Every structure is written in C-alpha cells, then in structure tokens.
Length: 346
Image (cartoon, helix red, strand yellow):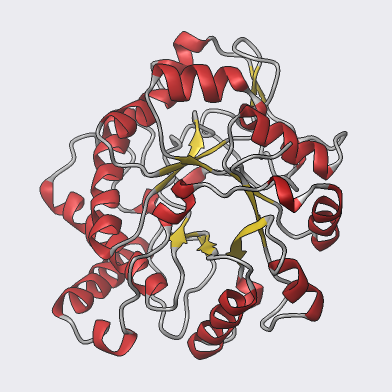
C-alpha cells in the first residue's frame, strides 16, 4: 500500500504527447522533472509547463536538475549558464572569505530566480557530496573539505531561499567518496559508520542542524557496514539515522529509480514500494515512460492521500522575467557568473 507518497515522471519531448496527458491525470503523479530534451526556447518551456499544470489532476511539483556547470539542463535563451560549484574556490584553499560566500549566494539566487521565472518550482540543489574521487560527482561538489563545503552550501541555500525556492540536498549521506557512478553501477562502500559520520555525513548533519534544507535525496549506494540495502531503500539510513538521529523532518525524494544502483533485479513497482516503505515521499522514474505506465497500472490511485510537505516545496510566486532581468541584483549576479567562468578558462 502506498500512503502519502507520489511519483515524479518526465516527458519525452518539447510538447505533451497524448499518453503523457493521460499519465499526468493519474492521481499517483505528483511531480514532473524536466530535461534538456524538453527545451527549445524560454517561450516554449513556459507553454509546456502551463500545459503540464493544466493536464495534472492535482497541483504538481515541477523540478529540474540545474546545478551549474555540466549538470544544468537549461543554459540558453533566458537562462544563464552558471559555473560548476567546484570551480568557484581552489581545491587547495580551505579558508573561505566573505567574497566567495557572497558569490555563491548570488549564483544560487540567479539560478533559482531564472527557474522560477519560467514556472519551475524546484531545482535539485545543492550538491552536498564531497569531491573525493567519485566518477559522477567531480566538480559538481563545492569542495573536498567538509567544513568548506558546509559554509559554501549554506550560502547557496541562502541565495535560493531569497529567490523563493526550497533547497534539496543530495545525495545523502554522501556520494563523493564512493567511486562508482550509480547511474551505471551498483556502488558499494565498505567504510564504517564512524568513518562516514566524520566525513561525508558531517555536511548533511550540519545542514540539517542549521535548518537550511527543506528536502533531501538519498544516494543509490550500499554502505555494507551500516545496512545491506541501498540508502534509498534503507529504513536504517532513513528512519534511524536521518530522521531519528539527525532530526530531519523535511521531504525525501528518491533518486531516479531507473538508475542501475536502484536494483536491476527489481521490477519498477517493487522499486517504488521499497523506496516508499523506507520513507521516501516522492519517487522519481526518469527516461522510461513504459516503467511509469507499469507502475500506474499496478498501483491503486485510491491509496494516495498526498503529502502536505510536497505542497510546501511549491513556489509561492513566479517572478516576471522581463522585470527580473532589469534588476541590479540580476545584472550583478550574471556578471559574477561571467567573471568566474572567464577566470577558469583563462
């Protein structure tokens, strides 16, 4: 039985297909994640989002992976391509000055403001993983040092909050020290809980304690000395550690259940149920329309009540783009982005 949880789906193109309209009308669908393939222009994207909201059976959370650098789905037309977080501060530097903190804050405000100006509620950011050799993290991370990462991430969240967007930390309890990419592998980490707690987990613990996060996304990693289940399916990690020990009471998204790390041996319905039973509030199924349709067919919409925490993440207002781009703060933030990118390519 599913209770107080929902599914986040995606779209194949720049316009809604008939079967996607039908899927959006299913009460099990509570969110939509956008990708680069859904974008041709700012005008087209706004119309697509408008059509999605009209087709949905309930208020729908619209999200995107816009972090900056190589993970930014929209970076042309009315979007600014901001630099990767790992390029803002040198890796050999551990003293964070006020100028860097302000730069990070303004970049976050810029990214969030531009998303909101297109009708997008949420960007899955910030990345709280440490840069410690992961194949998938790299310069998506702020830094390799936990204390530096905490300071930069808190500034990032302040910028997003000022723009009017919730913050989603990922990938709990940290993907940066695990080499394998969970998109294409099933990573295992053999460190003890104490080792994890003193490094990767320290960032999440600090961000939760300072109340900077409204939501989190767990990693598809098995930490074998803690639990045999990947984090997103683990009541040990989600209920005992995240919620009871760390006191997190925000919304929990699964990472994409189409990833290899989510379990190739499981059906999609089994993956959804395992994530929800562990404590996830909204599960993502990306790049596989047939899998979403399978789950919608096999699970009963009558069991869905909806979670008020989802509504808490929805944007309260969307700025007018033509007004936004004429503000001094917007001009200054774009200049910061250009300066950092120029410095990194010099």
